[in-house]
Length: 396
Ligand code: NDP
Image 1 (tube, rainbow, N blue to C red):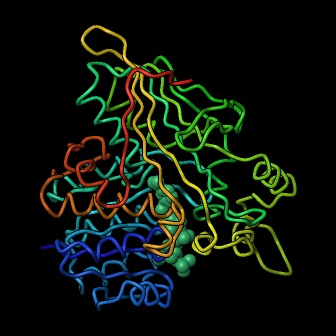
Image 2: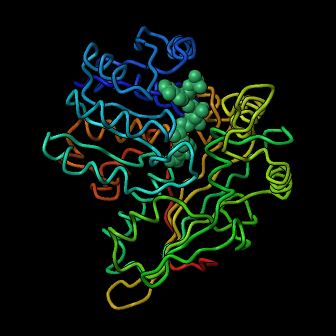
């Protein structure tokens, strides 16, 4: 029996609302966001009067505190933007509420993401006996839970980890991002980074690429990016010698991205326009397709997983664990595409793990620090079945 407050009514918030509403552990559900009408639309689509809605500016701790004091949730699922992570965590501390998110904090004026800001809340959450669950989407999220599962059941020592993220879907638009365009473009236009022998190696943006084969999809150009779960995984699994993250991009997408950067539209600093200040990337977001709107004509699948090499019983072993998710099926169920779906399902399931006492502990945790078994036991029936392959050529 648990009361949950969902913050953020975008693509991911839509999926979280659908999934939470189907789970009887959640007796009271509130969906709050900057624009209340979007919450109302989602609540109506879910139906059954399961979801109350509210307006909140999650940049303002005092507004969050007022909302939490009146609704009194047990847990907040934060699926607004990474900029709001710290204000929401502050409000949770003030009101005695547990916390879960899907992306680590990022300052608005600096495209820089790392866990240090949120890990710094460790003592405060511990002292209050509260739990903060960080990064419970797909990647970060299931990618780290897959790694924890591999470490628990299949390896004595994980040595090489490659997280591979392929979106082989086609939405028919010339250019669109699959989640918030501002966050997405900030992520992929910065330098790449991977971990090797105790050090972080920096690369140029999308400098390193490889052709990788994805199940049911085939070969796709895959580019090395920095991704936030690498930071927590190498800390929590210190046997890892090398950890990398790969994401697929089509040539058409990369050409658009290059032009966007070359003409200055990816800038995140303010520029003067007609007597007012605008941030070019925020303006671009306003004219690009809303990721939520892509679902209707999206075909094809995503495939995200972990390719792992390491030692079991003194012998080298390779292992691949992944999920493929179909855009059309995700749309039929929730009205959103697979990228929102693969993020929202784990967020709702992580909150259920907490509500049922299967994931617990006072402090700030990355998802790989919890038991992966109960989560993965239910992930398939929640809509994201997973597959394991052993002793195969990992290509990486
Ligand atoms: P959207 O942009 O579609 O939705 C974000 C929502 O947050 C919108 O409803 C927006 O309101 C709301 N919001 C923004 N600022 C505020 C604020 N100050 N106060 C209240 N509400 C606010 O993003 P997505 O749904 O695509 O992504 C949501 C989160 O999921 C992001 O943090 C993203 O990084 C993360 N993500 C994680 C992934 C993973 O696998 N771990 C993968 C994909 C996304 P409004 O509608 O008014 O703009």
